[in-house]
Structure formats: structure tokens, C-alpha cells
Image 1 (cartoon, protein in one colour):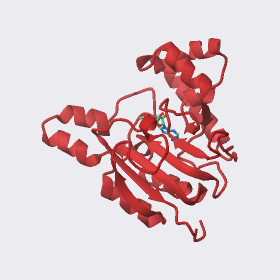
Image 2: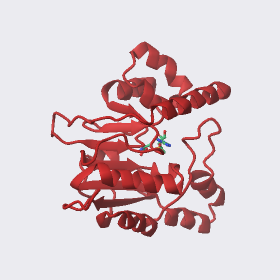
Image 3: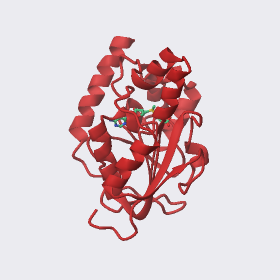
Length: 242
Ligand SMILES: C[S@@+](CC[C@H](N)C(=O)[O-])C[C@H]1O[C@@H](n2cnc3c(N)ncnc32)[C@H](O)[C@@H]1O
């Protein structure tokens, strides 16, 4: 199974590379008329959002139920979800298969909200910085970006409390040999995240609490309250060239 997953992951990576130049115009959700982007969504998705991920799951979302059933094991989703949960999520939500290390495939000033949970640390620092710059570009003036990441300060506290192995395995050397996407490539605390957001031109950068802030649906989207730093930042209302 591990060899099969490695082959599938490699094919998936190549496909992402082939598709990286494309452009997508995200349709506003018919319910609230807003464009809401959930970056690095995994299967933590919500009605009304366009969910973007490079995983195989995002690629096969919307496939017939019989094919999703076959992919359930091959994708590794059987470790976390029942078959019913898996096919339900992939059958009823909007997904876009895209490698976020490259860019955001959306036009300037096209999104009201950008949300990302436990994803930014899966990109190399420079790729993450570029993605935040891309988020600023695609947000409408006054749009909000909410970034949630495992808190480096929490991880260090775990280490200092003697939970050394758990700290290393959960935050620094995430072991999933078959998946490049699962690995952590950088870590942030509030100050590190705030500084990069401000340097890029975001304003009103605030630390938020779990399920508290200006982003819709965070009662559904926010997770892992103990270990997470939640930050919201806004695109200036009068955009200066982004
Ligand atoms: C730890 S999961 C987080 C999922 C979800 N957002 C949550 O809060 O539970 C990280 C997600 O990032 C995705 N990912 C990692 N690298 C990526 C990349 N370069 N482009 C797009 N998605 C990526 C993985 O496929 C995975 O779904």
C-alpha cells in the first residue's frame, strides 16, 4: 500500500505542475454572494467556500460514488474518516486541485475572504511568503485573511514540559513517508506571522481567539484550539497597487 501511495503521490505532484499556469475565476456563492477561499483545506471544509488543496482528494472530488469508494483506501483517508464521511465531503463541497506553493490561480481583487488552517507550515518559508502576497493580491480591498497555524510557542512549551518526542513528531518531523504534502517545512508563532503579514502590506493584523474574528463560518472551520495561533489581517481598503 505504501508503494502504491508513493506512486499516486508522485503522479499527483506531476499533475499539479502541469496545471500550475491556469487561471480560475471563482464564482460567488449563491447564498451570500461572497467569494471565500479555504487554502490547504484537506477535508476540513464548509458550505459556501471554494476549498483548495493539492491532495488527491481535491482532484477526485465530485467523482462518482463508486470511484470515491475505490480511492478511499488508496488516498489514506481511511485512517481518519469513515467511508460515508469521506464520500459525503467529496461529493457535496466545491474543491479546486492546485499546488499552493506556486501561486493562487485567481484574478486580482476577486475574493472577500481567505482562510487557511494548519497549512502554511507545509510550505517552505519563501513559498509561504509568496502565498500570503498572492492572498493580498486576490483579496478585494478591505477583504480579510485568517491564518491558523500550530503555534511554535506551544510546541516549545511541550518540549520544555518533557514531551520531547511528541513535540518533534507532531510539529517538526511529521512522518508520512508517502506524502510530501504532509510534512512541515517551517513554523510560526504570532510575532513571526504578524511580521510577514505587515511586511507584505496587510493592515490591522490581530491575534484572535479560537472561533473569534471577522471571518465567516469559523465555528465550523477553526480546529485544534489548544495548539493553534489564529491571526486575521486585512487588505487596505484603498489598495496601493496590489
Ligand atoms: C494538516 S492538513 C490541514 C487540513 C485542514 N486545513 C485542517 O485545518 O485540518 C494540511 C493540508 O495542506 C495540504 N497541502 C500541503 N502542501 C500543499 C501545497 N503545496 N498545495 C496545496 N495544498 C497543500 C495537504 O494536502 C493537507 O490537506
